[in-house]
Image 1 (cartoon, rainbow, N blue to C red):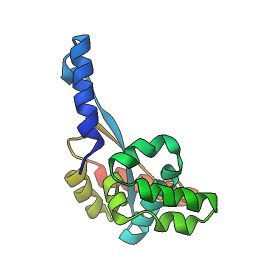
Image 2: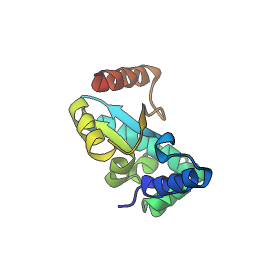
Image 3: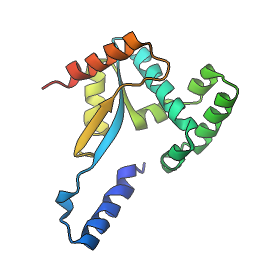
Image 4: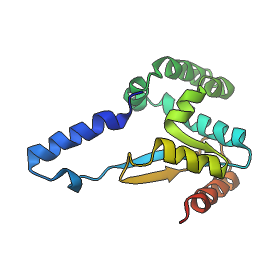
Length: 151
């Protein structure tokens, strides 16, 4: 499976070389959707909703294409046009959630991050889904992210 880092790191190396900068001076920060709940299915559905929402935004198309999710994005956009939230979420397969998010119980999320995102970014920016979340649930998830990844 190709990752965006497979394209970005070589492009950064070429740009650093062109400008005479050492590659280690170029830092990469990346956003990772992070949803944590004692019920892993709830967390995954929250991440799925955020991914569905982002899939509607055409500027995200290149990243969806890179990961092989073009057809799913088209289904999600069609559901958005019908204002069918349930169909939007249903069009987001587990593979899409796994490629773009860490979602589950605290232990599952720590393991997912270590397996899929550790070492990819110099700084990982873990953020909560917000699409469809109540302010209370958003706050709970932000607290869970802080608690789960506190050192």
